[in-house]
Image: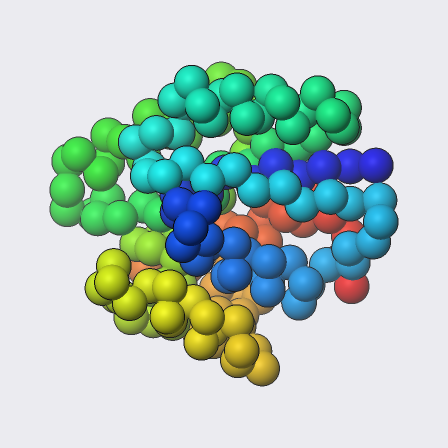
Length: 167
C-alpha cells in the first residue's frame, strides 16, 4: 500500500483545499485500495513546520511505510509581496530538505480552479459549488501541469504524476 500525505493550508473545519485536490485526483488518476490519500490541515500557511503538523506526519508515516509527503499551498502574492515571497521560499526549501514534494497554486487554489479571488467568508460555499460541477472549473490538464509559477496555474499534476498512475 502507498499513502499520499497531503498537507494543506486550510483548516479541518473548512477543508476547502481537499475538495479541489480530491476532485482533480479522481479526474486524472486511478485510485484503488492500494492507494490511501491522507490530509493534514495546517490551519494556515505559516504553520507548515509546527510541532503538531510534524507530529501528524510522523504518525501517519508510521502506519504506512510507503508514504509520500506533499505540501499543497497557495503562493499568494509572490509577484508583489516580499513576505509572501519569503514564506513560499521557506516552505519550498523545507520540502527540499525533508524530501517532500511541493505543489503550488498561483495565487491561490480558487484562482486556479475558478479564475477568481474568493473572499475568505465565501471559500467554503464556493468549494462546495465547485465539487458539484461536472468538470474542474477553469482548470485543465495544461493549466495544472506548469513548472513556472504563472497566474491561474499550478504544478499539481507534475507532482502527482510522480506518485500516481493516470487513468
